Every structure is written in C-alpha cells, then in structure tokens.
Length: 110
Length: 119
Image 1 (tube, helix red, strand yellow):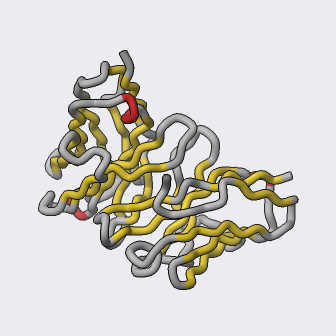
Image 2: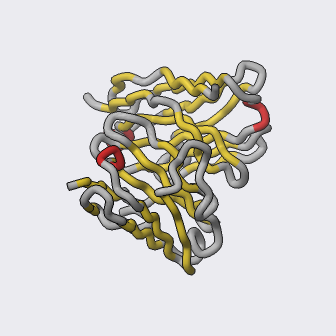
C-alpha cells in the first residue's frame, strides 16, 4: 500500500488532455513539494516535474503540475503516443524522514 | 553528462548478503546527496535510503532499517548499499539516484541492478 494514492490507470486519445491525481497527507504533499516521474517500459524513471510545476530542461511544456492542499495533479495536454508510460508522484515525508511514492498510473494512448 | 552506473546485483539466498555499488561521473559527486530506490518486478517505486553529502545524515525506509547500510566514498565518486539478512520481498531492481536540491529529489537515476532473493 503506497503512502501516496494514484489511480492505477488513465487513458486518452491523441491530442486530448489527461490528468493524473495524487493524494497524500499533511506530512508529505501538504508540507513539501511534489515531483512527478515518467517511466517508459524497460527504462529508469525520469523526472518530469519538480517543485510542483517546474519542468527540467528538455521536458515539453505539454506537461504541467499543480498542487492544492494535500493533493496534486499532473496534466498532459496534446497527448501523443510516446506519452504512453507509467507515471509516479513523489514527495518527501516529514514523519517518515524519507521519500514516498504513489503506486503509479499506467497511461494508455488509445 | 551525468552518469550513474550500478553494479553488484545477482541471485542470493534468503538470509544472505549483497553489496551494491554505484559509480558516479559527470558531476561533482561530493556536492550532492544520493538515494537508493527499488522497484520489485511489475510493481511501483519504493524509496530505500538517503545519504547527505558528508554522510552525516542517513535515512532508511522502515522496510530495510537494521538490515541495509548505505555509505559513500567521495574520493572514489562511489555510493554503496550493504544489504544483509535479505528476504524474498527484497527482490527488485535497485536504482541509485542523485539528489536534486533539498531534500534531494531523486534525479537522475542509473539504469539499475537486479537483485533476486530466492532459494
């Protein structure tokens, strides 16, 4: 059971906008920044969004993040086939003194 | 270019030990915190351990506390994870990841090394 809660799956058609939610608590999302990772099949996770809504160099602006209270969300606009991957949210947890991850959301591009 | 290369994985019996290494290059290793994160086959990501730049602060997930020891050698640009009393549930790909900012957002990650605990 993951500390952060994500829906196990999401889907959309090319060009659509999809959002993935991430729910936590006051000790993690509520008091720290949220980060999002993309994991393509057979590869290591890649940082997609950090500090709630900052994109590392090279990440398209189709990807955006937001946070409200103890929840966060990742939005992907103009969905493309290459966006098909697993997406994970992550935040530092002050009570556990460690990083906590969501269970992951498998995004399917129909 | 930042490179992190893990090694030391393999097959080990329950109760056994294994030492993972992570060789870092392309950045000033001593200036960054580091993390170990694992992923069991077909499962999600699980953070394992964090170490600060000078090793003064080390944190562990409850699932490995008392069994795993994380360390680093800044002179050798290397990170280690000593794993003792291994259990079936420790079977996973183990990734080392550089810590970005505070409190060390894991980024980037190495390619991972597979650890299989089985009799």
